[in-house]
Image (cartoon, rainbow over all chains, first blue to last red; front, side, top):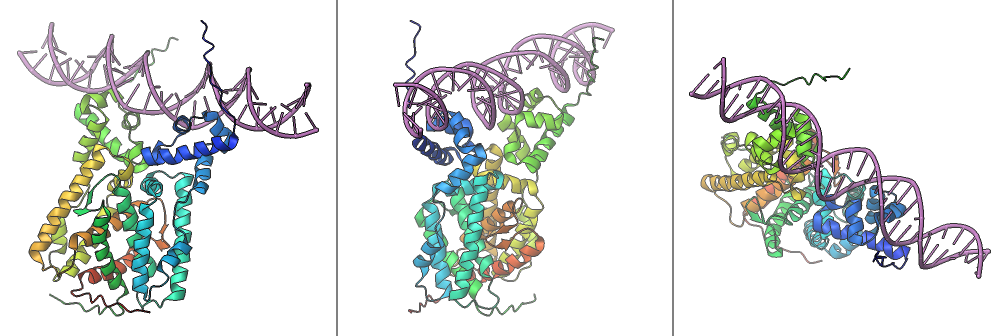
Length: 217
Length: 217
DNA sequence: CGATTTTGTCACCATACGGTGACATATAGG
DNA sequence: CCTATATGTCACCGTATGGTGACAAAATCG
């Protein structure tokens, strides 16, 4: 037999195929990290021919851009505000806000995977996520300034940037290691412990008058 | 002419070649990131045939391992202690120690590049560096416990892990971005500002009795 | 229904990768 | 000096990558 090979035709549905491709991107990021996302891998994972990726998204960067617009990669500022809105003091607002941030990040493993890849993988996807992060930070700072009185000498942007950076980095690392600097970072219970210290750090950074008294030895 | 092609022989010197290969690894990490280190790239960069890499180091992982033993990737605990040894209080010791940490990390761009690649690039090199970090943390914690009295409720491991994580991550990110969360992270001057907040956070985390008094709205 | 556009399939290209075998010759040991 | 080993050179392999051209058939539109 010359084996006509029954090539099993496929229902033609541009929209469905496009979605399958974008879904495959997400699955690949999750499974193999952002560096595992390539034309061939995506086509294979999506069960679509790679030529369709080029037709629909232009090239790999176009795919990244399209995927960046697809997902729900961050909490929104509104969500943040409603989640923290009833805090009486700035300190309580920051504590609740950073807890909210950590909880929301843990719900978005794809975002964590992208963050993990950020430093070495400067694709449009990571650039897009960075832009969102910066815009959101500015928004949040404006809201904080409007709602709370900031103690003199307190540097709210530096404070939140430091703690958010630590949270994001440690959550991203927790995908592959269990301990960082002798501290467990894997389970929610571990993070309860960590947040006790974060709360104290926030209190310190907001302490109204740091006496600066130096003792000489 | 049949062009005998003058193949330009090379002086044979195993030691020198080996060193050239390891040097090439460092240069490549610096220029292209850890993911830019491959057999072909290293051979090209070192001006040596790749078969020599296999002969001398086994395979790519062996190369990583050999390179991990080559470099001075971290400060030593002794250096840390002499740099901080005269601090009168635990708070001052931690402030000085973390400043020292940041300064030493900034002197080691290769280490920063490896840290940047850590989350997605689990080569023996990053594993080796992680092990050093963990050992060093334990060492340091022991020394601190022996020298200073730790206030009740203060979690020194969590405190140092959080701040060190933020420093390492932000320094690694500073290689490719200028601002994180609205805060400049590039120049030493930027870091002076950041360290003001770090100092305050340390004070807060070491504050002896956090009253926990909540105000209701 | 018939013509045109769109979707999907396949075969191909050049390039790069990690890895290996065969061979020449410079060096070191007897 | 002659021999054995170690060093370096070259040509190859299979596999994967990003990317393109050609073609068949399904869907759409007149």
